[in-house]
Amino acid sequence: MAKAYAVGERQLILGFKGVGFEIIPVDEPSKLPAELQRLAREKDVALVLLTESIVKGVSEALHEFRERSTAVVTIIPTHEGSRHVSFEETRRMVERSLGVDILGKD
Image 1: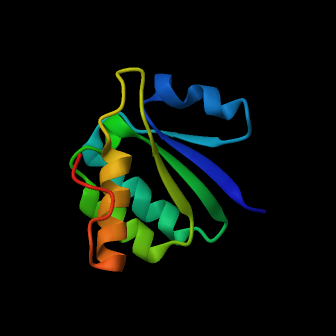
Image 2: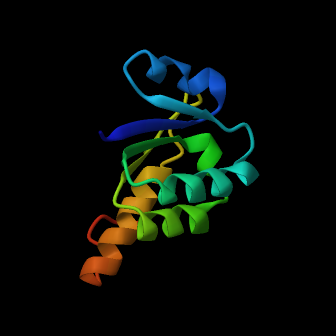
């Protein structure tokens, strides 16, 4: 059976447990790559939600996870507001696919 995970600061992801997500508390961005590697090895992972604050500075680990896993990865904003990390990731993927930045820099 497919599983959904929420990864990030415990106080920000705890609510996802109530709707069936498995939670993985990660308090420092430096610990995220190890968790992503572990999730990439699991075959039943279908969805991974990452808090925007925990993704900061680990874009290479995120890219590796996307290469190794078929799971859908979504970056969710926190109570601090969006830093547009998810938009930047999407913009880079579209630009890489099409060869043109159709979404713009801002």
